[in-house]
Image (cartoon, rainbow, N blue to C red):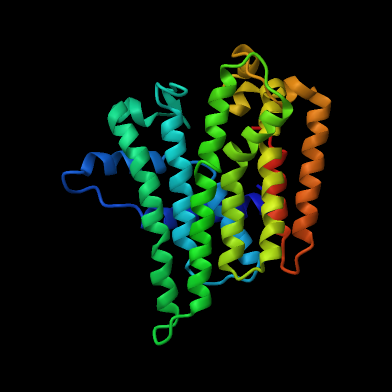
Length: 307
């Protein structure tokens, strides 16, 4: 195991502890929905979004704990989207990460409620950053820090909503009913369905660390490139990947007549676009004064993954 892989493993463990610390207790008459929420978010995963958030926060010199509620919140929002994606009305999937999906275990109605609850609880959790900010200066609330938390909340709301992830998901559903989609439509879907939460993660990390507006804009562009390259690589792997490595059937896009960057542009051009996007993302990160070495390696591992 390489030093990077060991570091990743330790960081995931730390993120798991942070997420668990913010989860609600499974008590009361609403216990069933809380159980379904916790079942969903504790199903595992790479925890990439909170990791990208925290590493960007560190890149810009962030050292406090106000980042932690946002790390948990972004994973709650990501998880709620997966719970709803798995529903019979959407993808109708029975397994995710080797476990039965939430609607299979708790029923469709409770899965809908669990997704709704995770989205709402994400904002309840993120709002706790105000309390942490106050604790840092008990005698005098740092107004600039409070403004930063408010700005981070605005980004979280926008990138998760109709001008973000939900908008992309809506466009994706609409595209499934068409015989053909343009590259502009496909890019829109990828930008909002996949890249939006990556953008939110990295932007929030930068904002809470005190980055300038210009730096936050650069981080947004970097994150857009990462999200888009990640999705195009996913399309490539569906054609070239190994089923055992991927843990899911390959060729599903072609089987389902789903149009992807590969079907529209071809495998070679798709690979070239992944390379272009990733190089631009790395260049942006290396332009900042902070240490971006781990963040660059993390992004490289995401974009050029084989599973």
